[in-house]
Image 1: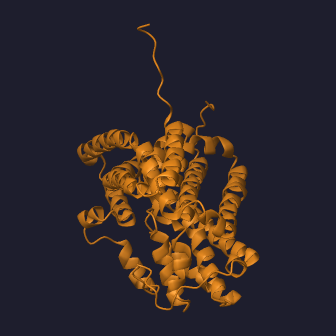
Image 2: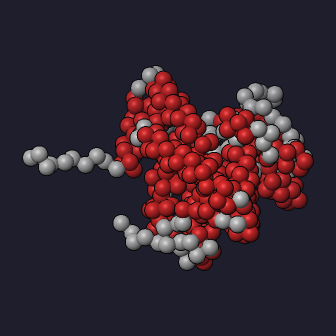
Image 3: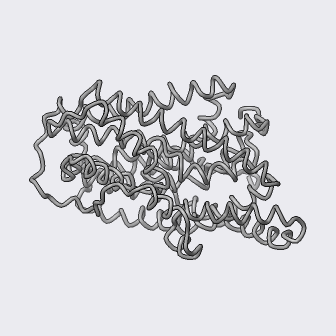
Length: 409
């Protein structure tokens, strides 16, 4: 009897239990459930606490392991070209679906009052100069304090390349950073143990706030968008893996836990630590994962990017505004640039959408048409972000002959 051990449920099972328990509590105890959002908020704060040091240590070691500037440049160019390719596909699919299915016209929604407050700071799209300046940190400490992933990435790239360039002199600091990275991964394990509790709080609060009836009221829009996400994942990303000779279903199985975590918390960031572990288990080289994945969280948020064109044209349709093909292509080109550096946190894409609406003189208060179900839509796009970055990492690993597939378990 002393040798009898009871296995704890896997994290995937725990998250599913947390999701369904949260839905039940949110539905049957709607008055109390909103208070449970504190559990989700605490979990997401813990995630934000570890993201900056984890991204920095991971990327510096990834760049240092790649070696010389030439190798870093080669992998970096391949990575950015892939990201741009995936972004164009996501933006295009969003435009095609919203024009084909016209949810804004079919649903005949009551329009918000003119000048209604969306709660967002709305600015028109910045010029290219401002965009470029925003990429470069004036202080790495300020960038880390604000969890500005793209600025941390820029500094880490310079730091890693410089460390690789000076050779043995950098060994002491690299060993320290490597040790710090392992410590952060251990901290990550502690934080991830709380994921089911965070998921439980998030789902309970969402169901209590919106009710299950919202699924019927916005059913057509939700069906259109989630159908588009599935088409992107299995149609586009699946085809990319097929061409690259990467076992797509095996990859999906490997990343099911981080994808589920992103879905249930509506945050791509919550899945970042687990995604690193899952991709390495799948067979991607550690140095490629360390290099590509942090970049992906700034430059390759496929689900959020697809949502931008979809949501913008949806609101225009609801107001009876017909955007010409030229305007829509212009919008896509603008979003191709302005979507970069968007944080992988809840509602970050709404800020970009608000700026796009203002730029094309579409009523910004139209965002209120989506606010009620944005959490639900954000769940889908966050999970898609994780899958998109997993495919990107696997593709770059394959191109660099650094993909060593493990036998499926």
